[in-house]
Amino acid sequence: MASRIPVPQLQGVTREEFLQRIYPQRKPVVLKGIDLGSCTSRWTVDYISQLGGTEEVKIHVSAVPQMDFISKNFVYRTLPFDKFVQRAAENKHKEFFISEDVADIRKQFPLLEGDIKIPEFFEKKQFFSSVFRISSAGLQLWTHYDVMDNFLIQVTGKKRVVLFSPRDAQYLYLSGTKSEVLNLDNPDLNKYPLFFKARRFECVLEAGDVLFIPALWFHNVISEEFGVGVNVFWKHLSSECYDKTDTYGNKDPTAASRAIQILDRALKTLDELPEEYRDFYARRMVLRIQDKAFSSNYE
Amino acid sequence: MASRIPVPQLQGVTREEFLQRIYPQRKPVVLKGIDLGSCTSRWTVDYISQLGGTEEVKIHVSAVPQMDFISKNFVYRTLPFDKFVQRAAENKHKEFFISEDVADIRKQFPLLEGDIKIPEFFEKKQFFSSVFRISSAGLQLWTHYDVMDNFLIQVTGKKRVVLFSPRDAQYLYLSGTKSEVLNLDNPDLNKYPLFFKARRFECVLEAGDVLFIPALWFHNVISEEFGVGVNVFWKHLSSECYDKTDTYGNKDPTAASRAIQILDRALKTLDELPEEYRDFYARRMVLRIQDKAFSSNYE
Image 1 (cartoon, each protein chain N blue to C red):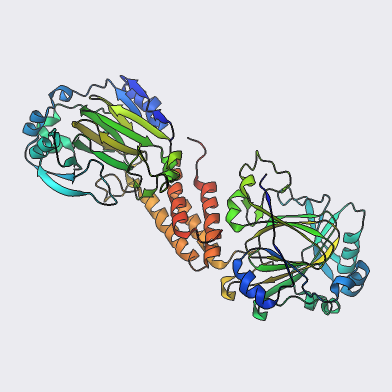
Image 2: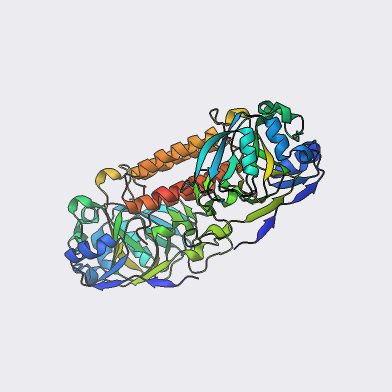
């Protein structure tokens, strides 16, 4: 198993420091001691279920803690927000809950909005969405990437987050935006022999911490305790780069989707050749991509 | 340095054995004891320069034995065939010569034609070209592949041939159809760190031997002695697969060229994204090619 690289933790970073020194690095970092407002003390289960209201929210419900997008061991449900919070917070549970609504919590939950100060480390026009991340203790969300930059704000509770660089995508056995390696802590190395090559970054988020997850960085989240979090997504690229139909922030930028569509046409052309030739020219195509589009400038 | 894998040698193979057991393997093999006609005893320097005539042929002339297509340490010349043969055969030489004319020696050299029996291990309609390979002792031709199947018939003299599988293209540092690693026997592993991974097949061709080089197999030839050889190229794929403008048998099949052109459009689309994103989606494209077009069925 590869060593675990701790995600750097920085205390009391200002907007200017973030924008000048941290953001351009495009690497995850845990920001500690950011003023998040009164939410860190106020947001108990009773308080948020009372003030959050009864509007229905979309959730995943799973019978086991490790959600599996391949065997689909979970279902999509809607529940009134207050009910959902109460059930997710139960100490003993037969089912595990996680919210997945995409919205702007400032509009969806106006009574809670005043309690949280979202770090304004980006321009207003870059804002994409803010989402409650409320989940049962033990629940593990599969490794995936988003195409937006992301602050995972841990208001209460505790999460373990494992991250992988976009550079290590080839070791993660991707299916779309998700990794097929579900059991990070005890992976099946017969099935996923290259997985051990992926450099594993790791941090534990305590109440009050903010994790910066740059776009394209893979992340896997275990809720070690019941907790309330808020995800804030914003655009790193200019607006026209993104897919206008993207509600969850996980559709690839339009230029990337187009490139992959065009590639599929190239592969279809190769299909005219026998296997031996197809394999050879596929290898030459890989060399061409590595030569023309791989970056050697960053790790 | 990787071990050297000897190319299998087979004695007295018939047309049927070749077509049924050897050809479908798509691997190089040295055929010994094939009846090549009287050329093996008749083709002395005097004889072929006399009967070959004075028609001009295209040649490479190099001041050093190892031809280098990067620094271009050779020039293209034309010489009358008889002059060329005499100069290439000189024991002491300041210049190294190798012929590169592409034609049908049966038409170009009618007086020599009757001396050689070209093994008819393919259909007449598959025939592409037959070419004299006459070169000075010591001359080394760079590692390259051709898109046609190939019999290298060693009539007189001795050659060492090193071959690499098309599967190992990624370790050969290609520039088009040629490998940039010129010095096979003492490669610069700082410059070409992956070269040692390429499995090296090797054989020495004695007078009378025929080497089958399947299309796409890389080969590097050193003439250990002055010698006369004949290369016979034929089409493995159906005629319409090949580039109609190809005279040397080294233009990629049209479907492959088209696929690479389409790929270039995909890469141009990726250029709209910043480096970090371009790198990531280029990696995803590589995974897609490996998944869809790489073969796992043959070594």
